[in-house]
Length: 249
Ligand code: DGL
Image (cartoon, rainbow, N blue to C red; front, side, top):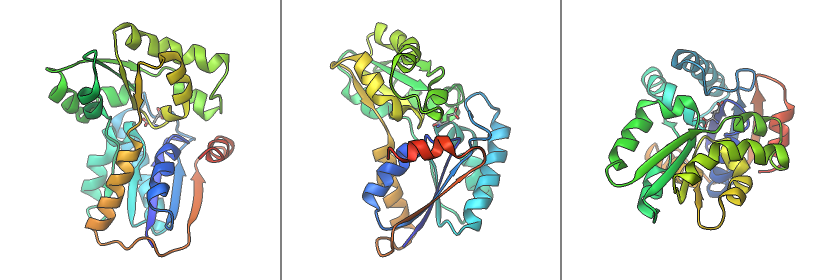
C-alpha cells in the first residue's frame, strides 16, 4: 500500500484526488488544504515555496511516499525547488492541458483559465510557446472562482455571474476548447459548460495527472493495491470548506 500525500491551497486538489482514487482505490491518502493561506494565485513564488516546504515536512512526517502538488500555482512556483530540496521524494505536478486542447480545436482558438501565478510561470509559458504557432491561445484569470469554490458556491446566480465575466472573453475570441488550469475550477465545470454551450469542450487535466501518479509509483517501485483505503484530511484554516467539497468527491 502506498501513502500518497496531496496538497493544494484549499479544496481544489480534491478534483485531482477524486481521479487518483479511481485508479488507486486501496491506498492511504493524506490530503493537506492550506486554506489559511488561500488563495495562492497572487502570492509571490517565495511565499508559495515556503508553504510548499512546510507542507512537505508535514506530509513526509505522516509517512507520505510521494507527493502530488495538486495545485497549478504551487507547481509553477515551487515544484522545482521541492524536487531539489527533497531529492528522495517523487513529486507529481499539474500540467495545463494545452496539448489536448491544441490537438482537438476546430476553430484554431483555445482558451485557458488559470490563476495569475500559473499564467506567468515559466512552465506554462514554455508549453504555450510549443503550440502558439499552430493555434491561438487566449487566457483569462478565473477571477473569484477559487473563492466561489472555497465558499461552496458551485451553482446559482452568483456562480454564473462570476464565471461568465472571465469565460465570456474566451468565447468571444472563438475558443472551442477551454483548459482548466487551476484545480479549483473543475468544481465549477457544470457552470462553465452550461455558459459555453455544446460546441465547446472543457478540459480538466486531473485524469492525466492520475495516470502519471500510477506511472511514478511504478517507476519508484512503491507497491500499491494491497492496503485498506484511508484518507486523512489536514487543513491550516477552518475545516468547513474542505468538508463541504469532500462530500462531493
Ligand atoms: N488550486 C490552485 C491552482 O490549481 C490554487 C488556487 C489559488 O489558491 O489561487 O492553481
